[in-house]
Length: 144
Image (cartoon, rainbow, N blue to C red):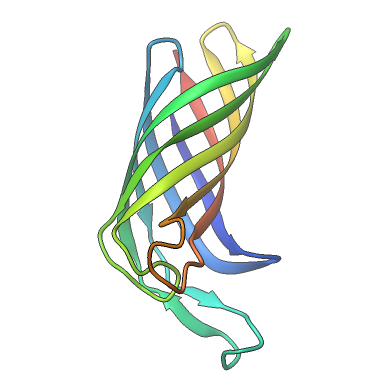
């Protein structure tokens, strides 16, 4: 799968652009991903000055187990859980290794082509504070 997406934190966009390339294996049960966060991200939060720089561009990598929880004709809903690695730490996340999860919906376009919309989160699960985590929404096209 190849996609594009953006980043958010709580209820606002953080102006980050993410470009993922993901490889699925074993009928979408496993996923390996490479993510390029190509722009600066800005945190909009009352405790910080307006448009506080929260993350510079960086690389991320993930490995995830995926479960299909619903399948209706051309639609599928997925849940995934795994690990992620970030090439840098920043205001969003103080650790490089993170827990990763996703919730996604997939629509089959043709026999071997599909669109997938996912919401993803990478977090250190409060091992170190502050734990804001990296959130992203991604729209990807995949080929089987």
